[in-house]
Length: 639
Image (cartoon, rainbow, N blue to C red; front, side, top):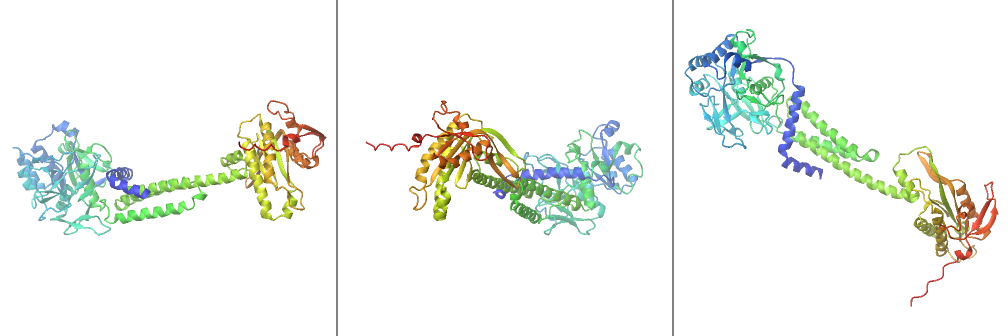
């Protein structure tokens, strides 16, 4: 059931799971971002300070040409412009000359298909820098519009004069830029991303070709003919997953104002790649990144280029599903193995183990991403393990409850039910747990039963004893008492003895009424007449009211519950005297003191004072009159 729910969530909530994975990836990038300064790529930023000093945007083309000349003269090996010049101007000549001399990589923007705005079809300038592919195959996106450089500049950005790359971001549902199309299609031509055009300009590669990866490689890769650079891994949709592995502060950023005014260190650009872009507010070049909700768009290109140089562009292998399935299967086996031993441990350990396994899958994903640039889709395996753990834990909890109820039922059949309920809620203890209460105790014993057992088959004796115990239990419970113990062929019943019940005042009345009912009910239960050669089986009952101590005693590993005290001793001794005094029900003076009250109207017969065995003070003994013990007359026949 848990796996079915996981499959349903994976199918219906795939976007949600991918969003969770993406946000966790942002957390990993922020947590593990390197702190070493990046010196291979220098950022020249047209920031707010530049606009305040040199004038508002757009700047004169002569000023931009001076910026390109200054960077080139200071020894930059390559310049990359994150700026699009869509319209021609009268002062273009200096800019065209600077671009022709220093051959910076130009930029252009394509409008990508957008479900929220499918009619977005801007057209400005002339696209340039297309790859020499005969067509633009799948999986690359078809653009719906473009913002490109004007024709004169576009000519300089077309091989062999130069290169142009698109800077079109692929926005996620939350607006964060985590992917960029490696190639965008327009009019059946393939236009590379800015990072790809930069690498072609730097290495002299004439083109990159898409190549299908094997099982442990990315679904697609862009491979150069000379293989002077690592292949660029792409996902199934032809996108580059941006590795936000460098903290934005790692990139050396110089204000364009400092470059143009001569305040930048002249040796800073020597041999470096220079990315020229803008972070100024209002220039519409702001993106959301894992580090900031508003960052300069050039940060994405800087991250893509440096990760490609290091061979650390993240990708998901084509056979990642096999690893995800293996992780899920291994986790399920561990959960199943743990479920087989939960009888020794709390059932809540299973959900805890599932949470640990889910966390372990995420840690594995983070480790693979940081160490090997492999992106593992971890949400579905983690969710399946967590749901299965909760399901197994719930099933184990249900089984535990059923077993506990069954054990409690067994326990309450051997102990008084209030005692069993109290023990079920307590941890085993070796301490004395007892209290004294004012109770009524009744002993009922089958006289001559030992001789009966010796003369009769065991099965017959067991049947008689079973019938007596069953009858006695039903009568005692009906009158509000509890069977405290079965002692051989006798029972010990107590009224008002349970420690978790409210004390009652009529327990003596209830006990005497139970004794009378038990006396009458025992006649059909005990064999009458007795087998030949045996004295008849008769029931003797002794009752006394007084203080007694009830509780549990013994080691935590082996305890017993019992009632003890003078009241219990008196009731026990009275049972032994029932045969000698020829009275089946004898009552102690503690209960007899209530004779004649509205609560106990039954008149008792005084038998005199006796010194009971084991006691030091004589006791006045009373008996229930024989006329009360006579069987009730038979019911008249129906008319």
